[in-house]
Amino acid sequence: MKNTREDWHPADIIAAIRKKGSTLTALSRDSGLGASTLSNTLSRRWPKGELIIATMIGVPAWEIWPSRYYNANGELVVPKLRPPKAEA
Image 1 (cartoon, rainbow, N blue to C red):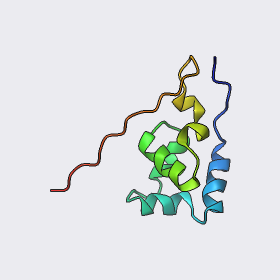
Image 2: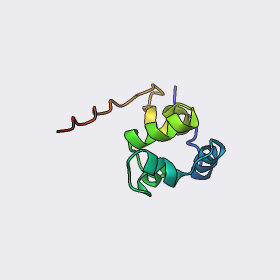
Image 3: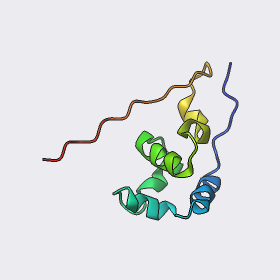
Image 4: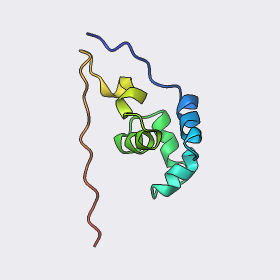
Protein backbone atom coordinates (compact mmCIF):
# COMPACT_ATOMS: atom_id res chain seq x y z
CA MET A 1 0.00 0.00 0.00
CA LYS A 2 1.53 3.27 -1.11
CA ASN A 3 1.14 6.49 0.88
CA THR A 4 -1.11 8.79 -1.13
CA ARG A 5 -1.63 11.48 1.48
CA GLU A 6 -0.07 14.87 0.90
CA ASP A 7 1.81 16.99 3.42
CA TRP A 8 -0.01 20.00 4.80
CA HIS A 9 0.75 23.20 2.97
CA PRO A 10 3.09 25.46 5.03
CA ALA A 11 0.39 28.16 5.09
CA ASP A 12 -2.03 25.65 6.66
CA ILE A 13 0.52 24.80 9.36
CA ILE A 14 1.07 28.48 10.12
CA ALA A 15 -2.71 29.04 10.19
CA ALA A 16 -3.19 26.13 12.61
CA ILE A 17 -0.56 27.63 14.94
CA ARG A 18 -2.29 31.01 14.73
CA LYS A 19 -5.65 29.40 15.53
CA LYS A 20 -4.05 28.09 18.73
CA GLY A 21 -3.09 31.68 19.62
CA SER A 22 0.57 31.77 18.70
CA THR A 23 2.98 32.31 15.84
CA LEU A 24 5.82 30.22 14.46
CA THR A 25 8.30 32.80 15.78
CA ALA A 26 6.78 32.79 19.27
CA LEU A 27 6.69 28.99 19.30
CA SER A 28 10.37 28.91 18.36
CA ARG A 29 11.29 31.31 21.15
CA ASP A 30 9.06 29.52 23.69
CA SER A 31 10.88 26.30 22.79
CA GLY A 32 14.27 27.88 23.53
CA LEU A 33 15.19 28.18 19.87
CA GLY A 34 16.13 31.10 17.65
CA ALA A 35 13.19 33.09 16.31
CA SER A 36 13.27 31.56 12.83
CA THR A 37 14.51 28.06 13.68
CA LEU A 38 11.16 26.27 13.45
CA SER A 39 10.50 27.78 10.03
CA ASN A 40 13.11 25.34 8.70
CA THR A 41 10.75 22.51 9.61
CA LEU A 42 8.28 23.73 6.99
CA SER A 43 10.69 22.82 4.19
CA ARG A 44 13.11 20.27 5.71
CA ARG A 45 12.84 17.16 7.82
CA TRP A 46 13.64 17.85 11.46
CA PRO A 47 11.88 15.46 13.87
CA LYS A 48 12.40 17.66 16.94
CA GLY A 49 10.87 20.69 15.24
CA GLU A 50 8.07 18.59 13.76
CA LEU A 51 7.22 17.32 17.24
CA ILE A 52 7.17 20.85 18.69
CA ILE A 53 4.81 22.05 15.96
CA ALA A 54 2.61 18.95 16.08
CA THR A 55 2.26 19.17 19.85
CA MET A 56 1.24 22.83 19.60
CA ILE A 57 -1.34 22.11 16.92
CA GLY A 58 -2.58 18.94 18.60
CA VAL A 59 -2.13 16.73 15.53
CA PRO A 60 0.43 13.90 15.17
CA ALA A 61 3.46 14.89 13.09
CA TRP A 62 2.84 12.00 10.66
CA GLU A 63 -0.56 13.50 9.80
CA ILE A 64 1.02 16.88 9.04
CA TRP A 65 4.00 15.48 7.08
CA PRO A 66 3.05 11.98 5.83
CA SER A 67 5.86 12.06 3.25
CA ARG A 68 8.36 12.22 6.11
CA TYR A 69 6.84 9.44 8.21
CA TYR A 70 5.67 6.73 5.80
CA ASN A 71 8.04 4.50 3.84
CA ALA A 72 7.56 3.32 0.24
CA ASN A 73 5.37 0.44 1.48
CA GLY A 74 3.02 2.81 3.27
CA GLU A 75 4.25 1.78 6.72
CA LEU A 76 4.52 4.39 9.47
CA VAL A 77 8.15 5.02 10.44
CA VAL A 78 8.54 7.15 13.55
CA PRO A 79 12.10 8.39 14.19
CA LYS A 80 13.67 8.09 17.61
CA LEU A 81 14.56 11.45 19.06
CA ARG A 82 17.78 11.90 20.97
CA PRO A 83 17.21 12.55 24.66
CA PRO A 84 18.03 16.08 25.84
CA LYS A 85 21.61 16.69 26.94
CA ALA A 86 22.16 16.65 30.67
CA GLU A 87 23.03 20.08 31.99
CA ALA A 88 26.43 20.34 33.62
